[in-house]
Image (cartoon, rainbow, N blue to C red; front, side, top):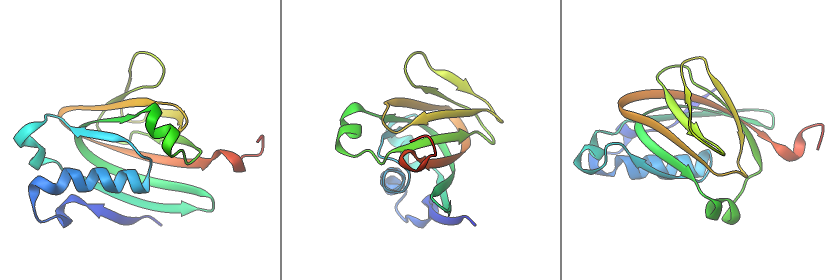
Length: 145
């Protein structure tokens, strides 16, 4: 069962919503650097919802969010790597992810597999809202480890 962990409507000051979202995702999913698109005064229009749950050692995060860029940097990986394989499913909207090369566009129904030891850049285009469901599998508990 997924429970709502965070909703930007919980933050009274609109200009603080994106910072609260960024902190919640970094604590609950994986540490990233995020910026809304577009930046500037439009940042207060950001909306995001994070729902989370667990299936044994597998974590499930269902997110809905507006346009943004999220980066996982080598420095963030060195400082804290939780050791997850992540399987992302796009239920609606669209986004792109660059893992080790040019970005790949993801459409509804697409899935992507990546791990938290590798940098990435994910982007949701301006004026769009999207969703993603991320399954996190601990690499140390997989049968071939």
